[in-house]
Length: 114
Image (cartoon, rainbow, N blue to C red; front, side):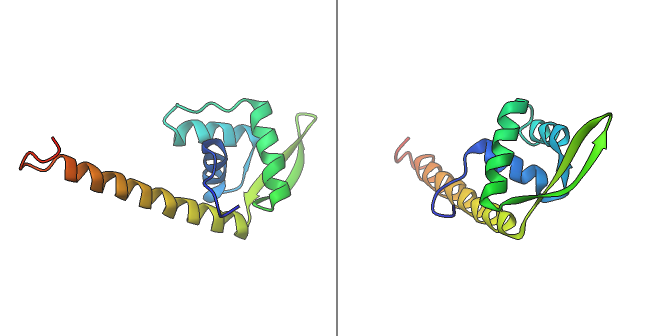
């Protein structure tokens, strides 16, 4: 998993779990907040992603409870999930730094590249 970048929805779900365990609806709301409203996960997309992340060992079910007659699972980031998210954050920082470096070369006041 560490040899390639995370897809944005996966990164956002892991980020939503980075500071606290959450149930599905809370994850959807966190992803919406983290993405400034740009990413709206459908329930189907979320639970497909959660099942995959569970299988990969990046998240775990922290607890299950019955709420309003329905089962609610609360998910938490695992140590491996945290490691993957830290690695992805570093990859993104390096990518942004390179983008900024190249833009700075282009935008130099001597007119080179502008």
